[in-house]
Image 1 (cartoon, rainbow, N blue to C red):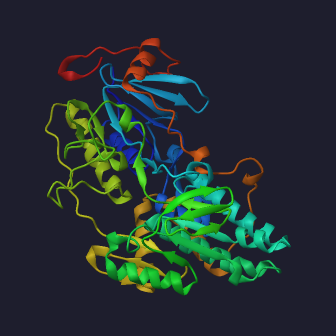
Image 2: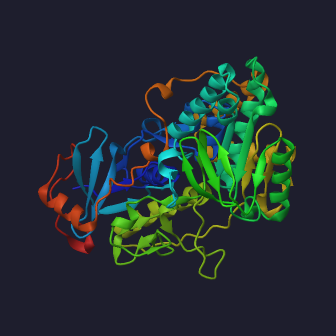
Image 3: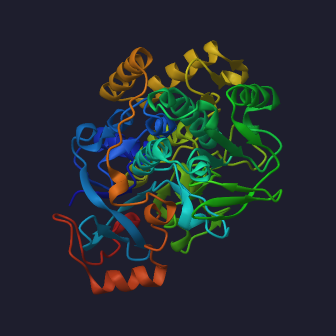
Amino acid sequence: MPDRVVVVGGGFAGLGVARRLERRMPDADVRLVCPEDYMLYLPLLPQVAAGVLPPAAVTASLARRLRRTTFVPGRVVGVDLDRRCVVSTSITGRREILGYDRLVLAPGSITRTMDIPGLRDYGRGMKTLAEAQFLRDHVLGELEVANVSDDPEERARRLRFVVVGGGYAGVETTANLQLMTSGLTRHFRRLDPAQVQWHLVQHGAQLMPELGPRLGEDTLRVLRHRGVHVDLRTSLTSADDCSVTLSDGRRLETNTLVWTAGVAPNPLVSRLGADTEKGRLVVGADLAVPGHPEVFALGDCAAVPDLAAGDGAVCPPTAQHATRQAPVAADNVVASLRGRPLRRYRHRDLGLVVDLGGPDAVAKPLHVDLSGRPAQVVTRGYHLAAMGAPVAMARVAGNWALHAATGNSSVRLGFLTRSSGRLAEFEHTDDYLTPEQARRAVEQGGDPVPGATAGVPTPGPAGRAR
């Protein structure tokens, strides 16, 4: 019987593990469970929302990237660690049970929300491809409706956009969408560009503190020069369908609240009954879960010790670390099945890049501060190299050139006729099972994935399930 490996998640980490396992274990039964049939290059999502790149340009097809791995379209909602089974819900709604000899957890992260009145009902996220495209449709719709409105208050409300979160996602979303709206107002005869207001709300004293004070100040200068209202040391206290209230007491009339104030590990992690650190699954430097050597975790969901930094630090949840953890996790899966020593993950961060749209960017490659056009060259070069898929790289580079020559499109895709695209519709935080619920689901059985083991495996030699 071939070794059975289940990989949860199709992002940088999960796809990287599956591809390496295909080379290292060509005869293994590797199954990748993911609700989407693509890997999303998340750092470029703000450019999708701004219309700089089409959605397909920031994805890599799992079917094209995987040769021997079986793609299972669904979401893993529970794990029975004792019986070595995962419980998944297919995209058709069918419950399925998968047995494994080795389990690799890389389900990624979700938008981190807080107990703020109205946030989940009226806030919009920027974590998924659908959210980015919905946000673009919404912003374009607000411009169109404001253009024909004769009510000054309605027009002002529709032309005010509020983004909460001064990290990378919030800054890039604000910067790119502000450029989009300022460029498109010339197509609307009745709109004055000065009427369009963008607000960026950040609870801290500076933007993107990880980049240091100099680049934070450079970013602040660029945004304010463009007319963006940046509110530091300020937070959101409540939201409703036509306004937001800030911690300084101001109430801003708006139809658009974009929430980008951080990410949280996938809810699956908290339902495993295993130790966590600030919500992330505790693992060793070899990416194995303590007490469960047959389970490995990496990426945003795992608190991986940062050996390069030392002092008990853990790796930040970035695409850079997820990409580099993948080959280590795959090699350790192979080593654990063959009774060989595991290797530890160690990588020094190469730096961070932030695209502010147009010629503007800030970057810190190898701890060197860059801004303006030099930073833009480094930023775009890094993104192209990090994508790893030649087809995706060609799409992105081609669309960057096309956008530079032709500018933005003001065409909506029609999503707003059916759904609002708000956080409450896109987050699946209530789908996951507790360990006891997962155990009962395994005992009751489900509709097995073709070729998979739906029953309860029994442990075999060397700790493997047979």
